[in-house]
Amino acid sequence: MTEILTEAFLVYFIALNGVYLLLNVLSTLSLRRINRLRELNELPQTHTTLEPPISVLVPAYNEETTIAATVRSVLQLTYPEFEIIVINDGSRDGTLEVLQREFALLPFPEAYRIQLPTEPVRGIYRSTTHPQLRVIDKANGGKADSLNAGINASRFPLFCGVDADSILQRNSLQQVVQPFLRDPHMIATGGTVRAANGCEVKDGYLTRVDLPRHPLARFQVIEYLRAFLFGRLGWSSVNGILIISGAFGLFKKAAVIAAGGYRRDTIGEDMELVVRLHRHMREQGQPYRIEFVPDPVCWTEVPEDLRTLRNQRVRWQRGLSESLSSHWPLMFSRRGGWPGWVAFPYMVVFEWLGPVFEFGGYLFFLYAYAAGLISWQALAVFLFLAVGMGVLLSASGLMLEELSFHLYTRKRHLAILALYVVLENLGYRQLNAWWRLVGLAQWLRQKEHHWGTMKRKGNWQKEH
Image (tube, rainbow, N blue to C red; front, side, top):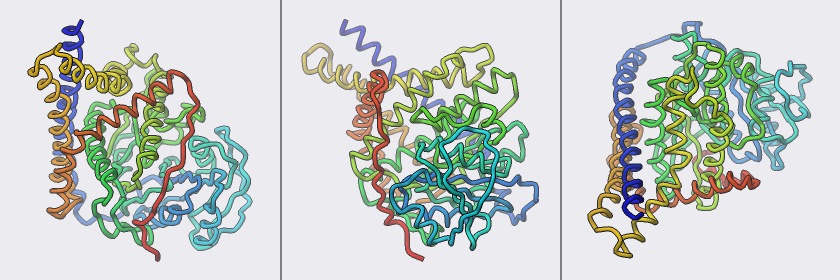
């Protein structure tokens, strides 16, 4: 029995790292192509008037600390035509009052077409200083419900969902819309998300990029580099990406409405929508593409305390479980393509069931070695696959960042990140595996899960 378990865990980790290495190769090839296009984009350009207008939706619940900076960051975007719709989802703090004070809101009676069901809308406001800004005040219904209300109120064919604790770079919309301009079958794109902790934002504009001071936030910098730069970019190259971050995604409104909008009874509404779009388009036999764009950057505040981080990771794992379990028919379906035949099985085996094998592997090998059931050579092979390859893959993500984007310009930054590439695999990733296991167990027991309170510090913002 020991030999069977030893071989099973080793085969699992070999397969896992093999897939990661393949995604790394695909990402590197994609970045080479993107870098060539970037050289052309850096030439002086003017708006072509071909860019479709965009509705930027900002759902907000108890975001009084960050909402003003987020709205200002959207207002300073360099894009020909866009509107901003902030959806106050029954906040119990001063979110609406901050918006009224900072942007001179006045009630604006407006009728809009209800295409998706939502909780009742209590009022609509328009800014007297920024004509493109509207605020919807509604009863609490969750983030998905807020986005559906924003879709109902939006006037333009594309909508971009932005978290209320996020800051966009000025050219973010220009970058993330590019796939829509070159491919008429594009229905969704997503951009890179980075940790804003340690950075400086003034009047909604990112003025200085720096590293967080807190160790937990630094670990997440490495995580985000790895997840976006070779995880999502690799899957995007084969139209197999199953998640677009809720912090920054651009969607074709008609496609989302046809698929039923955001589902209100799930925790991971962002991933569930993307998986449902894949399934809907393939069942209908319609050509489509969903693409990840690494250039546009969205900066968001990441947790700096264990309790908030734990709640976030448990919630992510439950959202993953709900998204996959709701769409089993996509896997190995006749029209499944890359999403159904490759990406979906990968998510099931390596992401959904991953914490069982990862955490179970650590427990088994440590116990088996201590009990004298396996040799030190077997333990060494396991640690190389579980820890050594983890360091290699994190280092690869950091290398891709340095070669392609170079956002962290100081040598001190790279030295610190290189250190955290190693440290991340010596306790932090194992802790994450445990939290993901908790999320999986909660989903199996159908235990009610609350979002919890995200502790916002907002100390990366400067007063205007």
